[in-house]
Image 1: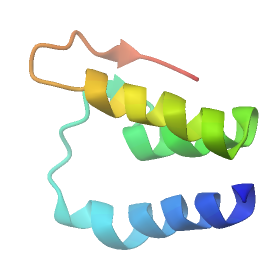
Image 2: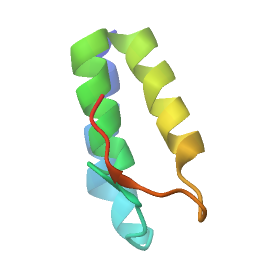
Image 3: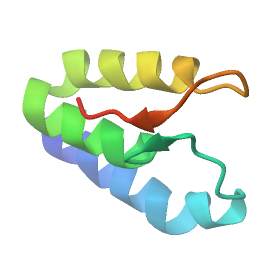
Length: 68
């Protein structure tokens, strides 16, 4: 389950991400964070952490460096 999810995330970065303006407040970007989290924690816990990260990303967020 991990490999197809990582493939999906990489395809997202390649084909969908370029259509959105670069406005990420965190480093690494949310899609890169998701790939790192899935590789480190597995599919379910990794995606849970990635979703939490996306929900933290808003105009009032401080941002900065945030690794999984």
